[in-house]
Amino acid sequence: MTRSPFSTPSAPSQISDMFAQSTAVLARPAPSTFERFERRGGTGQALMYVLLAAAVSGVIAALFSVFHSDVTFFGQLFSRLIGIPAQFLVFTGAVYLIGRYLFGGTGRYSEVAYTFALFFVPLSIVGTLLGIIPIFGWFVQSVVIALALAFFGFLAVQSSMNLRDPVKAGVTLVLSALAYSIVEPVLLRSLFGL
Image 1 (cartoon, rainbow, N blue to C red):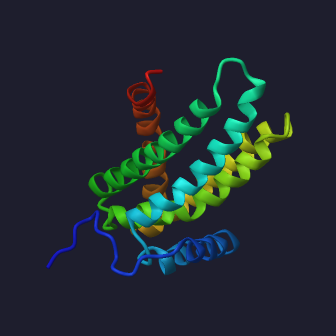
Image 2 (cartoon, rainbow, N blue to C red; image 1 turned 45 degrees about the vertical axis):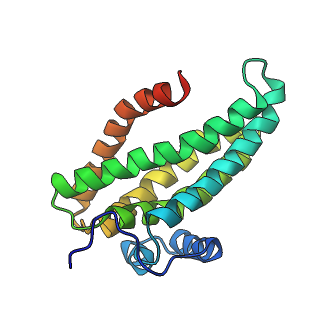
């Protein structure tokens, strides 16, 4: 029986397991580290984990909405709870489709989503928490976290799509970012009427 590229493994990971896996991935960044974990969870676990990052981001943005007259507490909260997982799905979907159909990657979408969640969630939470610090927070979010996401994304593409050629993995990541930059504004307009 052939497994669907979107199928989820039978033994789901718990959030605490995913934190431990995230720590290992961040402490020992390599495709082999991602390989150890890519089949320990699936799309559902990845989305639950990403929802955690969205909740942290939403609560912080909502609390700071009192300092801005153009946003509301609930607007910030719900836009992040919906927007961040949707954006994550679009980006990881682009990685899967481009890696598979342009470069012959053999990974499943569930592996892509799970491996990307392992680094996206902790980096996103750190970026959100440090982002509340004026100027320093902007630099951390715009430069440090962005570079870290690109670095770990490159490793995750190599692992989850089984694209060991660094050029193919890098081009997959760049094309996915371009596809995301085209789709993301349309997505936001359709979700939030922006």
